[in-house]
Length: 177
Image 1 (spheres, rainbow, N blue to C red):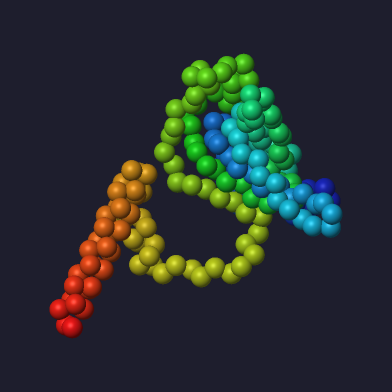
Image 2: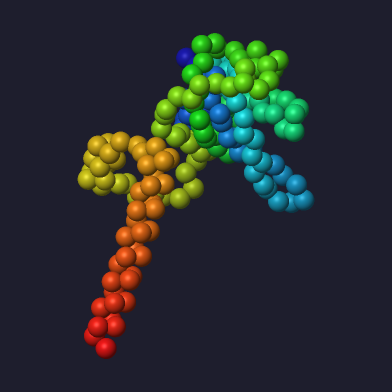
């Protein structure tokens, strides 16, 4: 039979936490109250440690360098003050704790990038979203994700096509007159 503390802890656990690993660049949104208003403060940095697992006492240590000074913050995973966490980038690392990054600078502090699908976890969905149809889901699965260069070239091609269509429609209008 579960104790009262176990029941309380189960209620406090967030269900939609992204799979955060050391080496991930994470953007955390934390609620801040000031002057009667509630704002969200963003902290983006590299996850250098994960402690105490994914349970109620789980924490992540996030580090970022601001104007040459290293700043580290420890975020409890299940804190009600954390609105959401986004994984921005994933890096290939071979350690569970990246404390050595505190000492190194420049090229030695670089980590190799690893491809992944962007993950966002929010506290609770505030609006009801429509469920995508099966056709849309199939299209998403079959189409591979494009690189940034491919996306740029595709958008440039679309712009050029739209300009050509505008010119041809203008020419057609002139011919009609």
